[in-house]
Amino acid sequence: AIALVYRQLNAENYQWWWFSFMVGGSCGVWMFLVAILWFPRLEAQMALTFALYFGYMVLISFGVFLVFGSLSFLASLWFVMKLYSTIEDDTSDSTSAFDSGQL
Image (tube, rainbow, N blue to C red; front, side, top):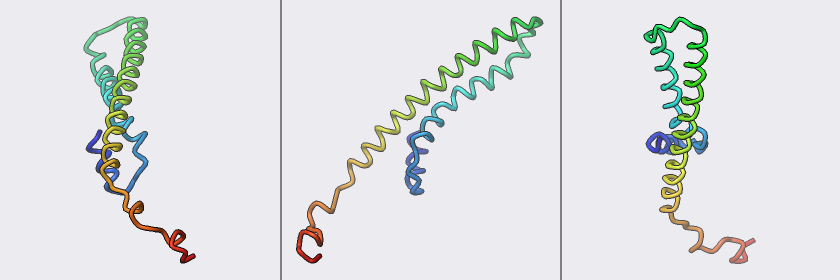
């Protein structure tokens, strides 16, 4: 997620907040897709089995989505804060046109 946010910032796209959350949360989406592919191997016959399996997998996948999305966002936030803290502010040393009386 950090590498993708860095690439996005290099492209001068500064709307990285939701992007970083979705990159990390995509693990939950993949987990649910694997659960869909795995279900036919269970050879379940009853509708109750279908409802319980997919009900629990939706909850678990959504939980994984939230946890990994949050961790990805926090890691990206830390990275961006470190990145911008290394940039020096050049305007503090020079006087502006307003301060020098040119305006």
